Amino acid sequence: MFENLGEMVILLGRTLRSLPLVWRQRRKVFEQFYEIGNASLLMVCMLSFFIGAVVALQTGPVLVDRGLAAAVGGIVGVSICKELAPVMMAILIAGRNGSAMAAEIGSMQVYQEIDALRTMRIDPVHFLVMPRLVALAVALPLLVMVAIMVGWFGGALVAAYNDRIAIGFQAFFENLRDVVALEDVLNGLFKSFVFAWIVGVICCHQGLVTRGGPRGIGRSVTKAVVNSIVLIVVSDYILTRLLLS
Amino acid sequence: MNAASDQRSGGVAVEVRDLRKRFGTEEVLRGVSFSVDPAEVFVLMGPSGSGKSVLLRHIIGLEEPDAGEIRINGEPVRGPGVLDRYRVAMVFQSAALLNSLTVAENVGLYLSEHRLCPPEEIRRIVSEKLALVGLAGTEDKLPGQLSGGMRKRVAIARALVMEPQLILYDEPTSELDPLSAQVIAEEIVSLRDRIGVTSIVVTHDRALAFGVGDRIGFLNEGRLVAVDRPDRLAGHPDPVLRRFLQAASLQPSQEVRA
Image (tube, each protein chain N blue to C red):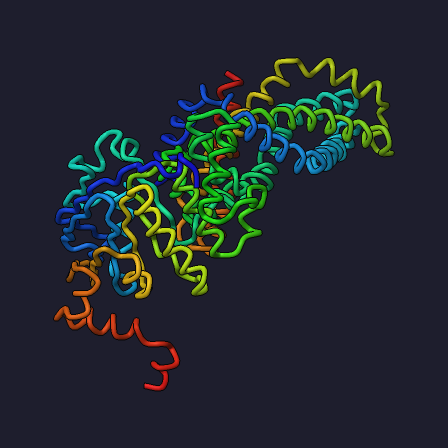
């Protein structure tokens, strides 16, 4: 991954430089946006519901046993909006859409479609990469917003109906409102915005450097997803440190 | 055929000088030099791996040579705006159509992406170019719905939209039945005669090479061993060329019997 870091930074720079032309590619941006949203919304809801539920299930009994039942809503609220929703949704999108991007661009590279674009003096970054990155950068924070709400709901449901926790909806959300500030939600959305660029750049770059036929495409997809996950986790730590300070 | 397609875009002269290219330890081009006249169909033949396609990719700027240079009308091909100014187009061996776009979107891609004319005008030009290659009415089809020959003809139509002065064909008749190959060959000659475009054709196909080529170059192991008119090439003394031509003129069944 690290030997290609320079190339990825250049690709990001070229993509950012082509942003003024985004209106010309609005149809492609919308197609990608629809693809990401349509393909992922159900999975996002399922995943975040159960993440919220399991956080409540793990922390609830421990806190209740120590007389801290009132803190359950706050802990579930903060952990989902600041950490779990952005990270887990970014990983989901890397596996679901990032892999598709790497495979699609990779097969275009292998089957000379990108060469054909170049012979028509059409910049592949402008034509292929920029619409995907813009769509991801808009879609991922929106999906994370959905994930935060569904995750909170999942946590509240478990907190209410699990015998060992048994905290009502009202008490759960009152505590959540006391603890979670708007800034916490914005932190999570900002993280997801950064993760979107990371996933997009890694997956599109991996597609563009694909060589060697179908096996090469498979290798690229694997590398794209694995590298995305590693960089999401590493950058999550760095971002958390920066946002805390 | 209408007035627009009758217009002669005028071909360009191409000069390749001492071109060298190495991939890792393998030297793919070893000082290739030749020139192509305006409105000439120049055919490059040679065994697989002899460097023909790599040479084409250099001419259209997809590869950078280690040494040597290519000039179009006297200007270095890697100079600013040269490929744009002389409108160099390429027809790939795989046709390289964008599978997610319709035939019309593929053919009109150059015009729409560079915003060279309004959508109605693009539709008109696309229909005209598709009619020119015998594919009228296929505008809304996806490349996956077309046969190999039709895909190649769409690729030619896509190249024609650029009003090119130089067209590069990479194995234009590979994987095609003889009738489709004949249509492609006729198209290459007709483009030269009708709009005076310069063509460089890379092929293994002896019938195509001798049918369309004004001159034929024979490339072997990265070296251009012969360049001559088709009627003179058969008598060339190079043993690899003689064996290649002899083998290419045999039918598979004859080869087996021999």
